[in-house]
Length: 284
Image (cartoon, rainbow, N blue to C red; front, side, top):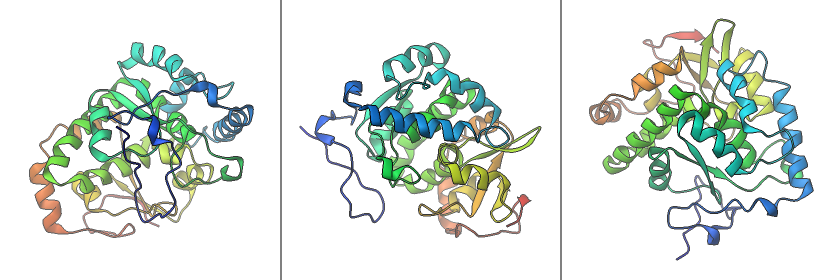
């Protein structure tokens, strides 16, 4: 039985991926042979552009883990990445046709399986793409799954996501994902650096998030993060900053049920909101 395509937000454009290939859990075969020379060239050019920007902008852990992708010659075979990833942290990546439902996503993360979209953007989408593609997922997300502490955080997030789904709190928990796994910053000895996949895979936002004076950067506090809406159509107005991946892992050890109740009672905050209780690192 074919699964239904998934669309997030208000887009009326049909999803890019072929969902007829997916099983009940939304995973499918990568079908590496489908990629054309142009597809591999697009991936290589994206990789070259982002790698040129990493020093001084990307987290040390990301830079150190990136070679494990083996991505220099084009789109890697997922099975090759998995041979190294399983040894490092017990994770594996699985192909999906595109966006997948919340519950299916949480179930995969909870079982240490990261869903990676298997199609690549077209050349005319080189600078911007609406949905995550194989470059965003592989380059942005997978290297840090080689870091044991970060890998454990992502699994714990998936486990918490299943509980949040049952409590109707998926939107609140999705903000934590957005502001950490997708758009998180970390303080290192040399200054602020990016570890979020949405930043690392974007040529414009990688520099903007770390260097630009316009956004505000706030020390991560769980309830503040869950209250904060986010932008999907522009660079972020606010970035939340951690001091270590251990901080993330320890943060997700708590039972979030009472936290969800407090967050709901306090209400949402706009993406650019400032609170008197914020620990500001930079004020935009």
